Length: 478
Ligand code: ARG
Image 1 (cartoon, rainbow, N blue to C red):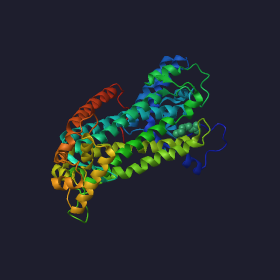
Image 2 (tube, rainbow, N blue to C red):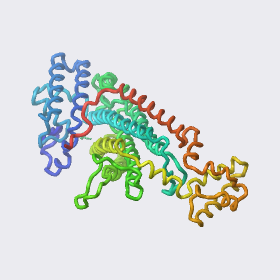
Image 3 (cartoon, helix red, strand yellow):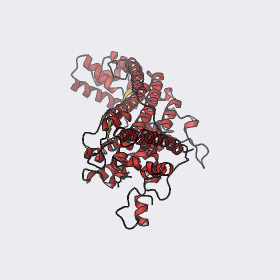
Image 4 (cartoon, rainbow, N blue to C red):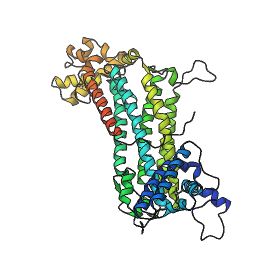
């Protein structure tokens, strides 16, 4: 094993030790970030007069070449390399001899890995936000088409009150926008460079952590070197946000699965975003939604698992922290796969507006309208609730819906139910009355959709201020 240590050991690591310790299978993804941080570190060593100008130039040239080689797949780990840092130092030494070994001055893998991971996370946050905003935009576009399309609004999965389909889709968009702002909040806290903290105690060499921070695009360097190498809050937080995104996707997915079922038949998924069955030729399955729902389980697993890893750690670097990478990478990869698929599915689904509208008044969902009408007519809500309840019971006994009652039926239940109540006993009539901001009526929903579009363009402005990601979101699966 090419280790970055060994002087004080008589013997090399056992096979079992090496196998357990090795992380190149997954941490090579951080190579471009590690190299970026190395370039910044080389400049600082030059500033500290620990590298002359010629050495700096040769080092930075080779670090850049290594980056190209790694990205092109021409340079990678050898079986004996312990981790990404060992691999890259080997590459440097192979190319530069003794000079390659100079770069390690004043830094430790502890501050290196913490820096690499923050840089990686910041790139993934850019990518994730980009994808979330496309999903929000697509939800807003579908919502725009359906600002006045009635559907049954449900609570407890029971018909409650009619709402518009646009309102329902916009509700999901609101949840994803909160996730966008969670990522932006995360970014503020993650904007700290650990480089210069060394193993835990900072450095006796005249380094310049502020300059390194600025070079790497961080607005500040760590105020405490122990905390800087121990802190993985930024990983835990990001895992939480990815879980929350997953949960929101899963909730949308669950509704799509219901709406696409034979019994509902409110939407039809596009062929390109559905799958068939190997045995039943007639089947069209909502697999995207099911995979989104299913994969959310592992996102939640990652956050709880990693929190457990952190729980008992003495506040410093401990090797346990190496366990941060696989869940983090998997969470980011998972969302990078699921988000575009869910977005395409939502963009292309078609809506059976008639069938959905037919269902809207079913289950006495207009009952609240009757109660509200009575209140506007001066009846205390307590009595209005009681009278309306009796009307619903009458309908249930006669096997009719609320919009089918006669004047006589109304009068029979209560003298307060004048024939004019019929004005609110229509779904479009009921929807029309819900005008206040955030309500489900067509005008309020149109206003909401406009605000969604405005938010998307504002957050795209935030994205435009970020540096382009150094690496691609996920290794291609094709
Ligand atoms: N590979 C380690 C990690 O991912 C970084 C190296 C720090 N190792 C050490 N023995 N100090 O956390």
